[in-house]
Image: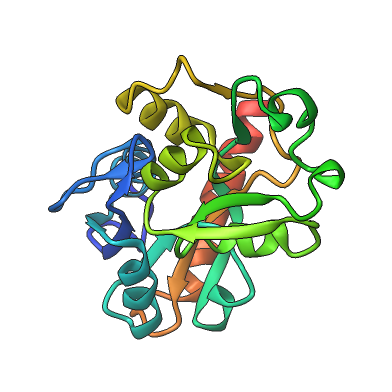
Length: 229
């Protein structure tokens, strides 16, 4: 059922174009778990008119910053909160886990992704534009090697150029299998306590604003209460 005041209102959301299966695609509409979730909430439940556009992640952030897009759904880092406002409600949770090379130092010693005390001076890999990694690694004793894609991280891990990757479990599973690396790499089960919870972030230059977020949050909170009763 549409929400009064939001029915027919347009919203343009941008997503990472190569974060399959969470979000992906080379043209609109974006595909993946995240666009499907947002379309269900915004279009089917709230009655809004939603455009889901996949772009390179760096461009997605710039589009929200400049107001070329209304929103994205991602971690509310301090940098992003300089140009966007976040919902109180989290709409997506992504378990971040470690992937290691079998029979390696990390294979035997990385039991908790939040405790990297045994990896001082060793190198972990992450993807350009992942604000979560800036937050996660800031107090860790490891070196961080940044590359443009998770595929490159996995290839470096496979040849022993990096010690481990801590990233979204669905993404690691997808690309490990796509690259046929399941015989040489191993995904650990334990998720980081800092696994990101994603609100929707609205550009401060969008026609939407705090009033929209208040309605959005109220709707989700009301429905969560009904589900609990």
